[in-house]
Image (cartoon, rainbow, N blue to C red; front, top):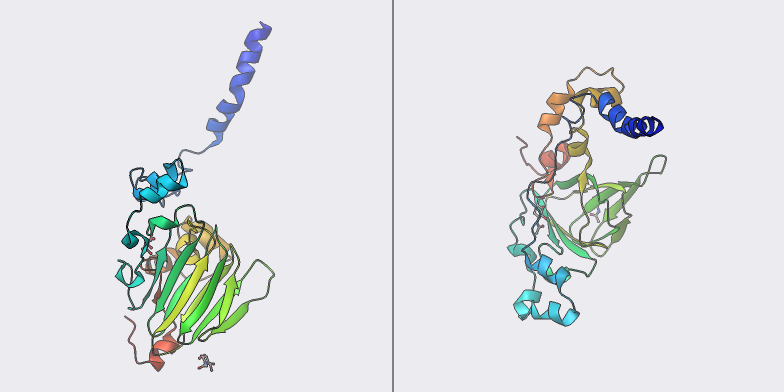
Length: 241
Ligand SMILES: *[C@@H]1O[C@H](CO)[C@@H](O)[C@H](O)[C@H]1NC(C)=O
Ligand SMILES: *[C@@H]1O[C@H](CO)[C@@H](O)[C@H](O)[C@H]1NC(C)=O
């Protein structure tokens, strides 16, 4: 009899769990993963190699060790792009623990507000005049840096940051990150993946706009860069459609 009681007791937590989760609780959880995990790539083989010498035999040619930023699919100056050399795009970086990104910002292009969950980020300007903004956490001051050639700033892991090319010429910046899988979360794209009523409530419930409508108009992540401010566009004679 006592044994039966304990058996029933052991079932309780699972019963209560499923009983209290409303049937549609998961409907807003949209998977961000679009591709199945790749287990047959050179990167996967490099991770499985028993010794470093075995790894090196998988990368026999000098060409294997050469990465051309301007030959990658994402590379564009219209409006701009972030091209990542990481373990996925450049196999020799597997196990190295770093990513190098090239930030190509056409006139007025910006990197929208985003953060990297797994990497500290150093950015140094090579050409152009770019302003960066960063907020490290609630209550921290906003940091604004003018990234003119040979000027550098740091975006610590998890910090909210954005930047805009102020000029009507191209701006080029080099971005180094201490992870070979940095991850990127764009704040606005992420925010509008939450249930609209929660976003509306987050705004204080008392605004006269439809958050679904705003959410639909946010540019896709795309190449990583979007068009910057209307003020900059007007200055450079760029029409925003
Ligand atoms: C190209 O862009 C996609 C989508 O933003 C990104 O997942 C991928 O890492 C990028 N590739 C390179 C080489 O930067
Ligand atoms: C860079 O752009 C900012 C904002 O437009 C401007 O205030 C600053 O003078 C510019 N710096 C240089 C060196 O051109």
